[in-house]
Amino acid sequence: MHEFLRNLPKVELHLHIEGSLEPELMFALAQRNGIELPYTTVQEAKDAYHFNDLQGFLNLYFQGMSVLRNEEDFYDLAMDYFKRAREEGVVHIDMHFDPQAHLQRGVPLEVVMAGLLKAKQEAEDNLDLSIGMIMAFLRDRPAEEALHVLEQAAPYWKMLDAIGLDSAEQNNPPVKFVEVFKRAKQLGLVRVAHAGEEGPANYIKEALDILDVQRIDHGVRCLESDVLVERLRSEQIVLTVCPLSNVSLKVVEDLRDHPLPKLLAEGLKVTISSDDPAYFGGGMLTNHIACADAFDWDEAVFRQITRNAIEEAFTSPGRREELL
Ligand code: HPA
Ligand code: ZN
Image (cartoon, rainbow, N blue to C red):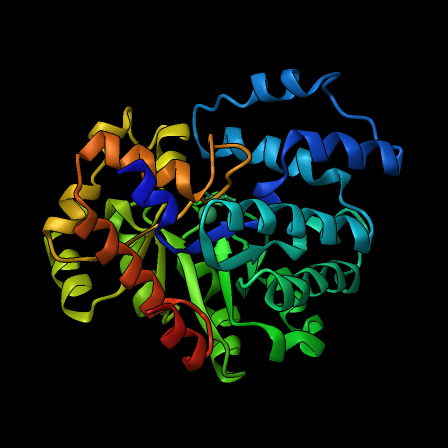
């Protein structure tokens, strides 16, 4: 089974590129940019990656990305992950990135975009890897700021596959971003949002009704509402589930308690992603192997999950045909 999973061409719909920053690269970039880290060794950083909840993780996530300053840092960050993912048999990645987390530190949007777009181009040209771009907004920051960043991103609208919504979910309901998502829709931009990771099932409903999203990132708490489950099933709305993330952030105690088998049994359009692989114990292959071990799934289940992801990936019709 592990060999099958290694060879399976995997499609990742939910990946925060800043969450792919491995401690080794974090140290190298810190040195290159003369930035001091709160760790003295790679091992010390890894030892700090134990979280009680989403906020505990976000604190280290934002701290880690402080080493990203110049275009080449963003390029190195993305290429480092793309190469690793390719070695794990990944063939497509829809990549979230968080402009506000960089703007806040004085890093211009142009620097972030130039580095990430260069890496995307190179991956598509040389690695047989297709890349989707999801510009995400931080939901614990004001909606006005998100709206401003969306306008500021005008030169890049054509290069975006979607906008997203991430960061601290509790007490930051989707409705807070109604104007931002309305504007994005007006611009013809596809919308996705994290919902139902730590937040209640009602946030998933809000994301669908008020933000008109095409995809729900996480969504595992949908099972708390039968009406919502029925809707997700009938509309076949894709859920980008991140098993090892959910264990790391204590959404579930143990992977064997994860609702993934139940979500599948309910006929929902489930996919598997790594979320923040540098922080949550591994990338796509590790997540797949963990599921195989925890749920005893056969090859057909993984084929179905992969087909779901291919159908929903932000890519051209030609590339989708190639992947199917
Ligand atoms: N949830 C919300 N925001 C995030 C995450 C996550 O899992 N990873 C990076 N930003
Ligand atoms: Zn996420």
